[in-house]
Length: 368
Image (tube, rainbow, N blue to C red):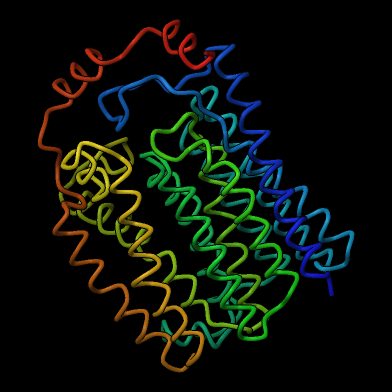
């Protein structure tokens, strides 16, 4: 067993590496004008460097390699996590640079999901009982759907400063603590803590007001990695999959409710928009920080206790999940999830243009 001090230092090193790489990516983005320019669908008004998710990817993959070399992770699990994650990161990076077709992105997301399920298997029968299902086929199909949805869900929800990185760090850290407390796989717990450390290293730069965005390379990678870790933990049967569902409740509810309302209304649901609950709240508060802080507060005060109880009593995990998420559905609807924006796109675009400094100005200011 790795000594606690050595483990702490290793995690600090992962976080420090992510922090350093993020700074390097930011300098490169500023020098080469790789900026996220505000438009009518943006929640920011100032051109901001993007691509910081590369730091999360690099630091986390290095940590997985270290865990494999120390035999804390077996080769099959490490290959599943790293291989699928690399596919998602590559397609995200390319999409950040040249806007790939949705069909190409989806094909890679599906391939990465198939890769994980082929190596780790799908959801276990004990978890499928929540859905009234059983069998290898059903478990594999639901796992593939979960991996694909989580990959895109984090992309949808990565719309304001700090929210996606903060949510990912919480889910990974809380899941590692709960799994460790209930006798889970130490290697997977360390992998989740490594993902937490890499994400926090980036979050230092991304906390409101953000100095860099993670881009699709980071958001898709985080969503996919969390889902893959959940499937790996579920395969060890150390805690029910519902624990991960509860911990990610804020993102799952906001994204799902918003998508369903847009589909039912006949909107082009696949187009960019600003109708998530968190986006409505940002316009109401006029700032990102209070919204991100409220999301993390809900995570800690409301969702974490329910997740802990679900792990304590797996037979009641489904009921605990319903109890945890039902109020969030009501809250999301009350906050406007899926409701059309109050302002027209032209008005928002004009406001963004009026506040937007030229790229030269933003580059000069960040260099100082």
